[in-house]
Image (cartoon, rainbow, N blue to C red; front, side, top):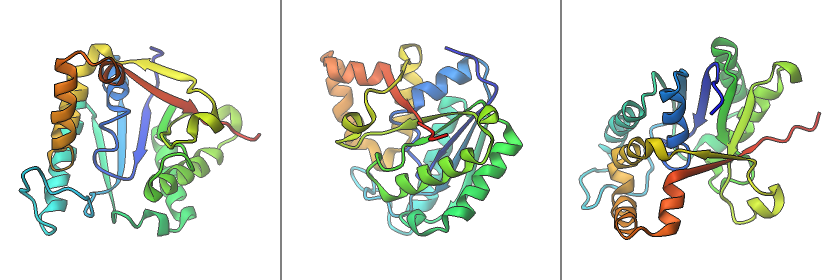
Length: 223
């Protein structure tokens, strides 16, 4: 794995970092690279309240904040920033203002790698809005000064339109940290974690592959 100068991860929801990126984050932390995770919301509108339910609509933001902190601790993230936007409203935030905020963090941190969602290929409106703002922020730098931008995509048409992911990260050395990050978001992931655990216990090849490898698309600039 290439040693990075600093990594900036930008996602809208607590738990976005846990699924397809957590192993990559943990691997870079293990490699001595500082990681900043900017999480736009506290996931107040999350669909799940635990299984069995133990949160309420009123308590969910506080619980999800703690879950996010637990996940960041499990991954070794040194700099967790909770930016205070409201869940399911990121698509309505002024895109330039959001890009300004992200651009400010890029200037402050001077990352060599930024990770976010690939706009248009990440299903949720908050994901796409975040990805668009990140692209706009990185694009403000002249091409030689831009950090690499790795994007997560999982829409049905992503491989058909973007091609195969060009970055595959083997995270098999940090699967325990990845599982701990998923487990930390217990209001949202209890059912998923139980199902995954059963598949892993049976050596399900798809579950093992999902656990051990993470995939990204390097953003394709027009200039």
